[in-house]
Amino acid sequence: MEKDEDTALRGYTKIEDAFVDRYLTKDGESVENAKKKLKKEQESMQ
Image (tube, rainbow, N blue to C red; front, side, top):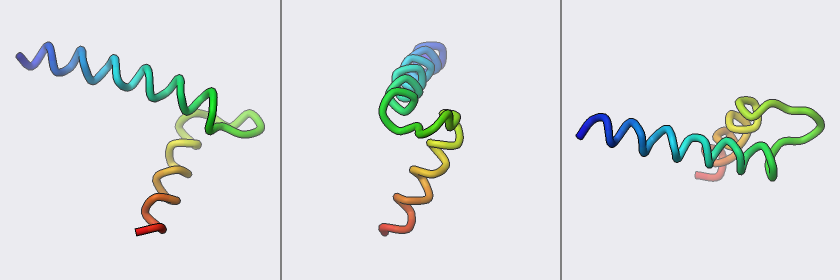
């Protein structure tokens, strides 16, 4: 069961990274930096 969860999580992460790379990065920004920026923006809205 744990192997299935790991596989699902890796699949989700790949999809998430591709989405962030395509739609949320700006001016050569890395996917990691875009995710951090998005997380900060979400936290500040709460």
